[in-house]
Every structure is written in structure tokens, then in C-alpha cells.
Length: 65
Image (cartoon, rainbow, N blue to C red; front, side, top):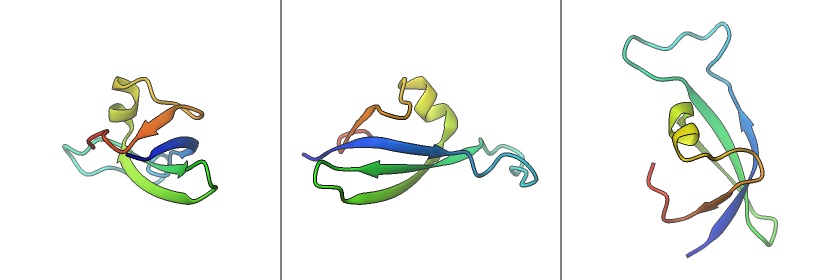
């Protein structure tokens, strides 16, 4: 099971783009593994907050979005 580190959280849904009714704001998360490979995931901001994940936190493959 791979472990990734959160390099950056970009709050792209804030600002002029409004969410549709019933949708929670999403953020784009940049993940990097120990060999420098990057991947990007889009998740609800509340999902990260509930799990206490911030930039620099470790993200395991077993985290279910």
C-alpha cells in the first residue's frame, strides 16, 4: 500500500465559481510519493477537515474518498 504526502491543497472552487445547491466545495490535492511521483485528486474540503489532513500530512492509499 503506497503512502503519499500532501504537497499542496488548492481551493479552486472558492471565489467566482459557485457550487450547485447541495454540493460541498471541493479542493484539488497534490500528492507526492517518496520517489517524487505526483498525482492529483479532487475531494470535498470537509472530507479533508474531518480527517485532520493538511499540507504535509500523509495520505495512505486506504483512505476512502
